[in-house]
Amino acid sequence: MLRTDFSYDLPPELIAQAPLPERSAGRMLVLDRGTGAMADRRVRELPGFLAPGDLLVLNDTRVVAARIFGAKPSGGRVEILLERPVAQREALVHLRASKPIRGGLQISTPGGVLQVLARDDDLWRIRLPMPVLDFFERWGQVPLPPYIQRQASELDRQRYQTVFAREPGAVAAPTASLHFDEPLLAELQARGVGLAFVTLHVGAGTFQPVREDDLESHVMHAERATVGAATCEAVMRARAAGRRVIAAGTTVVRALESAALGASTPESRSEAPAPLRLESWSGETKLFIKPGFRFRAVDALLTNFHLPESTLLMLVCALAGRDAVLRAYRHAVEARYRFFSYGDAMLLTTGVSA
Image 1 (cartoon, rainbow, N blue to C red):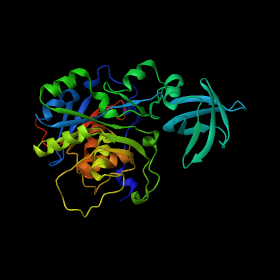
Image 2: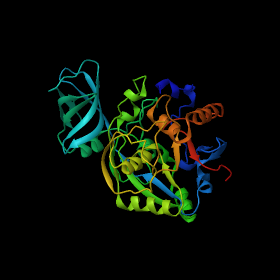
Image 3: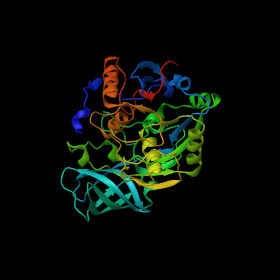
Image 4: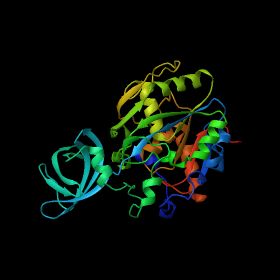
């Protein structure tokens, strides 16, 4: 399976540069996983596609103000983008400068001097003058994705964050969840849809392109995730009752499926299907979900539109089929949907007649 198998043409003007005034006002392309039928709807219509007893699982990670700018002793500018903390005052970061970075370098920032300790693959390990998350929250900027061609504003501090964000640690938003506002959540609960939460701290690696042509050679970046006992029990109850588990975003899929596997290693495809059993799980996941993956925990998915040739698009194709998904993407382009983080949504489910 090749990276280019997941390519599609996207006019640049369809990349959303700002959020809509109302979170749940975005469009929603519904794709029937069984028949391939499509329907053009709105996110606020989501409750009509769910049934009492279904379980919607959301990611409660909170985005950190993860980008900060500093200077070398020579005066050269350095951009620092947090990937994840590794100790109270140490972190793995992406560093960008006009000239090569070296271990031992000291970088002056508005919050004090950072010391570059060593390289770690594509990342750098640094030491900060105060606890990692406190430092970035106080001195950093909202880390908008590279395809948003503007500076972050005060609006982004509110809108590049979900309304239920509570566990700080992400450097990119779980974007499917940006569509949820309080009225939509209340309507879902009034319909009898259960809500549960996982935590997956989205890393900056989510924007890194797949560089290998052969997908079997691609190594996923690590992201920290936690699936608690209450969520595990809610998933198993829904399944036992014959109800669906709907993931709000690819991050939720990776967290739940990592918990179902019990580790972040690839699954054994020869295993015979068995009743789902989940236990609370926490750790780093490098799970790469691509066509051929057997889903254990997730039945349906609400997600945004993803970059061509990205691992996120590959995950969506694994759930609904590559041909059907790419056909839906072509429809979305023709219908002028808004793409990527601040863009519209796509629901992959069964039955589009709501």
